[in-house]
Image (tube, rainbow, N blue to C red):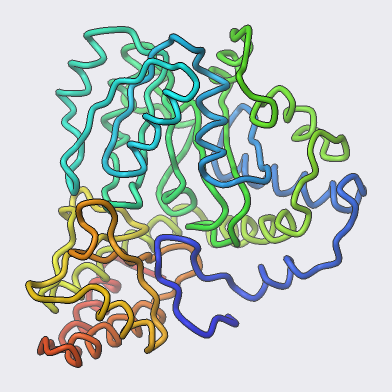
Length: 390
C-alpha cells in the first residue's frame, strides 16, 4: 500500500494499490461502451455479493444518500417506520423519516447493548409498520445487530426489512437470498457505502432491493425524490450506456476493482477474517486495561468502540498516536472524550493491526500508563490464530 499512516478509523479505510491504480485510469465518457462494460461488471459483482434476485444501485453519493433512497422508495408520507437503533447512526433514520413525512417510532438500545427482542416484538404487535430499519453495525458504538433473530420477528409482522450495512457490508454476512428462521423471511433492502469494509475511497452509495422491495416502489403513487427515485436508475443499472445522471467514472473503476478483491477472497473467508480481527484487537487492548463498549457477543466485526482507562486524556492519546502514524477516531455524543473508535476492516491486514497494538502500547507508556506491549501482542496473535484469520 502507498499509505504513509495507518488509517484505522471506522471509515474511510485503507486503500490498496490496485484500487488506486484503477482510480487513476484515464477518464472515459460516461456513455462510452468501454466504461459501460466496467460499470456493468461492478453492478454484477454487487449482485453476487448480496445474492439478490432484484436490482442493485451503484451511484454517486454517501451512505446517507443510500439511506434516503431506501426510505423514499418504499414508505409513503403518513406510513409508519420502526427504527431499531443501536446508536447514533440508527437514530439518523429518525430525522430522515421525519423529513419525508413518515411516522417514525423507535426501539432504542442502551449504547453498547443490543435491542431487546421482546421490545421489538411488543412494538410490532402494537401497530402496523410498513418497514423496519436495522443498523447492522453501528459506527458509533461498535454494536452488531442480531439480524438472525430480528429478521424473522419483523417478517412475521409483514414489514419490510431495511438493513443499513454501511459499516458491515463485505465484512459481515448480508445474504438477501437467505431465509431467517421461516419461509420468505428475508432481508428486503441492504444499503451501504464504498469507503468502509469494501475498501474503496468515499463517494459511492450502494443499495440493493429484492423483488418485494421493488414491488413496494411500484405501489407508491408519489416519491418525494428525483435523484433518489430508483425508477430513474433502473434503466441505467440494466444498461449503463444509458443516461440519467453522470456517474463518477473513476470511482466506478475503483469500485469494480474493490469488488473483484472482495469476491476473490471469498465472502465466507472474509467474514471469518473480520471476526478474527475484531476479537483479536479487543482482546489485545483489554491487556492494556481498555474495555470495549460492546460485550463480545454483541460486538461488530468491523470496528470497536474502546473505553479509556481512568485518567486517560483523549486528545493527548489520539494526537500522540497519530504522530506515530496510527489514526483512530474519537467517540461520539456522550462518549466523546471517554473512548476512541478503531476500525479493523476492509483492506486492513493482520500486520497493520499488530503494529497498531504495539504503538498504542507505546503511546500509553509515554502518557504514564504502564502497559505490557509484549503480552498484548501475544494476545492479539493468539486470538487471530484461534479464529483462523488469513
